[in-house]
Image 1: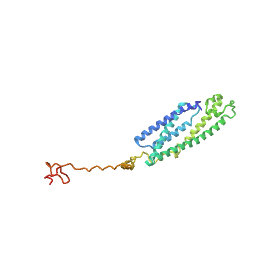
Image 2: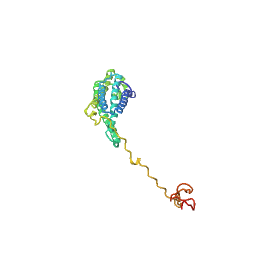
Image 3: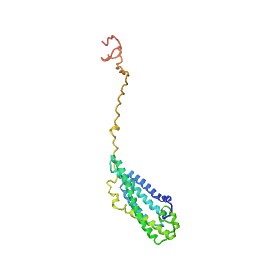
Image 4: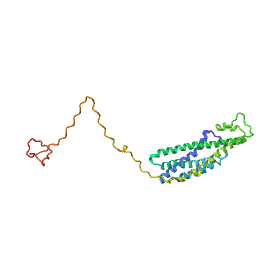
Amino acid sequence: MVHGVTPTLSGLYMWPMVAGMLTGSVTSGQIITRTGRYRIFPTAGTLLIAIALLLLSTMSPQTPAVTMGVYFLLLGLGLGMVMQVLVLIVQNAVGYADLGVATSGATFFRSTGGAFGVAVFGSVFAARLATDLTVALRGVTLPPGFKPTAAQADPTVLQRLPPDVRAGLLGAYSDAVTTVFLWASRWPSSPSCCPCGCARSRCADRPAPPTTARASAAPPPSAPPPPRPGARPERPPPPATSAPVSCTAGPPPSPASTCHRAACGRCA
């Protein structure tokens, strides 16, 4: 709005923040993997978020895009060191049986907090914008058919206004946005949001998850199928007999062995 770009092009202004989130998340994850310590990252990330929001609250309509990109990069770095590490802290505080519940609970409360924050800061933005627009348009005659709210969808309509009126409208939007950043900077700097009270400062060593008895036990033998009606019963296999013992050589045969001759002097 203030820089006169379209809503589609304004998304490119958020690329530094996305790059900062990616860098902060990957870097903190690699360091935690090597050292096992994680408490420093939420603390440093929270302070970095507060500093970045304070810097964003000082912007004006004359702030260049490069400076704004640096501020958004710092904000993204802070968010990257906080968001994923907090999920790791929650998972590290519970056992294997509660990992799913803990992860889903963290995601749920994060979504709820995001919706609550959008509602609160959206109300702050709307209230400040309405007050600033009233002051900026007091005693000003607008062109026929011009609506200040239409500039939110198409900022190019501001070019139809006189330079002094256009500067007043841009200043109103700029003050409303910076007020939101100023109020938001108080959240990460509050003691209730400081993660220094974590019970642990490093990842716990967990044993391998136990396997269930059902998975480790061998499957029970399957019962033979029932015989079909009218089918002949199968004969059992004949009993195994011992091999005949030669009477001409070797030691005398055992009593359990049978001779291959009907009459044998050695077997008598």
